[in-house]
Amino acid sequence: MPEKFVNSYLSEDNEHVVVECKNPHPAVITQHANFKFNFEKDGSHFAVFEAPIGYKDDLMKFRQGKYSKFSENAKNQIRKKSGLTYKVPIPNKGGYKSALELLALDKDKELKKYWETILSNPSSPVVLDDDAELASIPGEDNFYELKLSNQLEVRLLS
Image 1 (tube, rainbow, N blue to C red):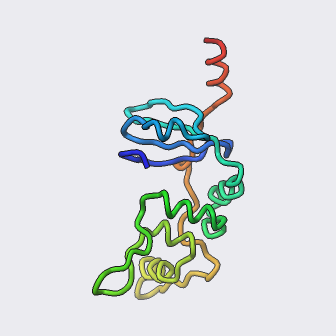
Image 2: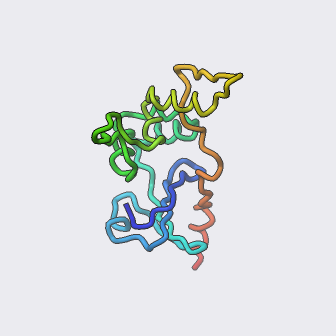
């Protein structure tokens, strides 16, 4: 993962993944088979990758907030490459420490209890359906409008 990772986004056409970092992207990123181009904006560095064909269905599920429906391969890649903590045992205490986002991929029972506790109050307990997703549907800030057709026209005219 590039140093100073900020966020990642899905393009408006579901064809590209955009990775935002505070530092320029190293060669390991720019030489990746799916790398298309990079650009700078407002002090951040962005790398644009073509979405792998094998993950197109997962990208649609992301857009719909159906994280638990991702393919096992996508879930494993997210756990492995996100840099987030996933089910790290807590010594001498039992249990584990984990990022909420990663627990949502499996509809973790402990995460469900956590949200029910957070959302409840003494006069109104909340019980989530067993089929409920445990993370929000992504908002507009999770998407990046690349307008690639305009960029390609500009590049061709240059």
